[in-house]
Amino acid sequence: MKVTVEEHPELEETEVVVRCRRLDPQISRLLELLRLSDARLVGEKEGQTCILEEDRVLYIDTVDRGTFLYTADGVYESRLRLYELEEQLAPREFLRVSKSAIVNFDQVKSLRPDFGGRLLLTMSNGEVVVANRQYVPAIKKKLGL
Image (cartoon, rainbow, N blue to C red; front, side, top):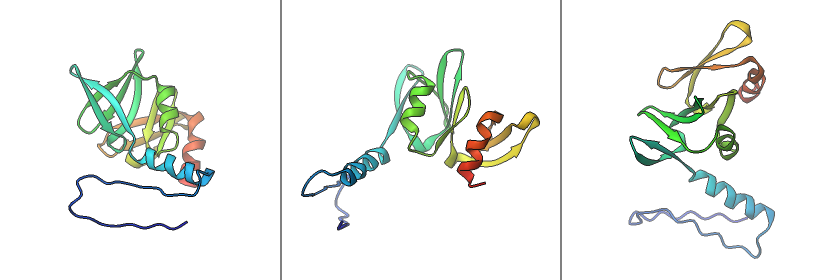
């Protein structure tokens, strides 16, 4: 596969063109990765629908049948259920840490053990998210431990 990158300072938006003899599994995977790199989440705040870049989301939590996206700027309500967001974010750096929470692993600043085999995850903004013990092995695997 030949890859060419051309820089054009006058362009306002990045454009990706894929030229191929035929659409094979390798090209399909490449296209999927390109689409994922531009993925966004939708949340509502104060009556407005907001489009959020995934890397701004610290964690996602459910409270009283509502699903909320937490960023450094505030809290946004999502119309999607937690399992739907988990499926959407599976190829990314998001990881389920409890029945009611998913964290953006790129936003985790530190981890420390807690009682009962749980972990306390300190996010980049200082908030702490509790990881239940049944999810700890997946977290350790993510860390390569």
